[in-house]
Image 1 (cartoon, one colour):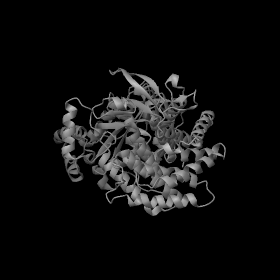
Image 2: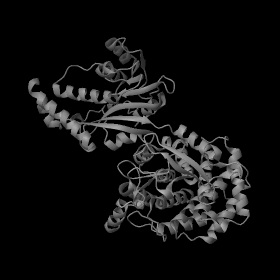
Image 3: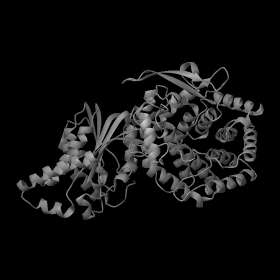
Image 4: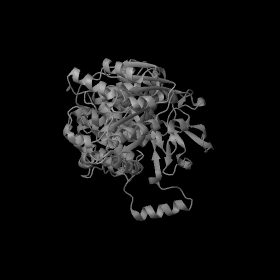
Length: 598
């Protein structure tokens, strides 16, 4: 949300100065100030704290070894210094319309802002990004926003903004993880006005009732009934996660990585045994070098998408070229007939991109993959959608029209498989599962982007919307499949209680999160206008702390997230105890999409 030019500078500065020290008021209005302060400070911790123009009573109550305050005019900063005094170590000012915080990266452990996010003249999106920059990796930002349920919204003051809960989450998504939310109650406008006319002693019981109502709203997570939201969030270090994931993919297998230095290729998977499943989980990882053709191609595709992006570097070029050479040799030796469509599609993408940054000769391999797959597959299975995905990257390089024509035909075939309810239905029995719905979105959206047939975009949006509505759990995880009959569910739950393998709908996969993130990225790149950022943020936050096992990257200790857990937090399902290179490929794609400039 950018700043809106409204107030003259003189009037704006007067507003900012007045905000520093609020005048005495009625018990009910004071209750709101106290409630915001109390709830915000309960979340605040850290030795080095930045206060962003909160009312002075908030600033005075902050306990920190080092406290810095920013105001949004020189006059307000000077008045804050006069009002609060030397309990603050440093006073600084910033331009509200173009807020650049005058501090280096990672300068603070925490930041707080109670009040300023109300102001239309403040560029809150830019400010939030700046706060993320100056906080350290484990930092926390606590701030408040008013909602349209605030009685003040009825006044329609031209200089104040109000946030629906989704608006507030959009402000944070996808770069922050929400840690806590307090929901503050205020009486509706006419009741609020009437109660404030009562003598102070008669307002006290209503103050106590409002405090209880805030506790009730927060406990029941009734966001839509709150007048104010007090949010605590932490920045997500996508750059650090990306560096760690690349290191894991190209680290030698003897150091629990996915690079096989003997065969100069990417490994299919690392399998694990659980050494300790207590509070400090510990796993023993061993290489699985079986050749299953959908795994390493996916990993290579993810690495190549990072490499050609504006954040890619030549750091891993030697291993990337050796991995490409390995696959080129396998293709030359006649393994194409053994490769599934969801191995060939990613390889087509990888070799097309390799022709862009390495040797143009890689394009010949991409053409061989294209011609083979065009003759062999007919888009009757959901995984065939990844062929369209791979073809789209070759189409961007071709001088003729053969690939584009095939891509248009694939787009038509995929569209024929889409139901009005927003579900792709192909012939394979797993077609309804989350990964296959997202693969279809990838191929569909990329085909739209490359062919320019944007009339189909609303169909991608329909699938993504259904995915959010029907599959996304309250913790941000995606269900593997949402449509399970009551009889089937009851039967499998009974066998689970008897100690048998949990039913497949009990499994939550890290890669399902990134499959969705990448589908949204391609929908956006094709011109999609619906804002899925809050859902993207929730999907990534599940990986980094919102799952039942906490941060899945820390849990694995590999530099990439643990592969799966069940709905009750289990990691010990025999045929699922591994981490695959295809999951790392999608993870790299997601992080690249989140970080790279369009």
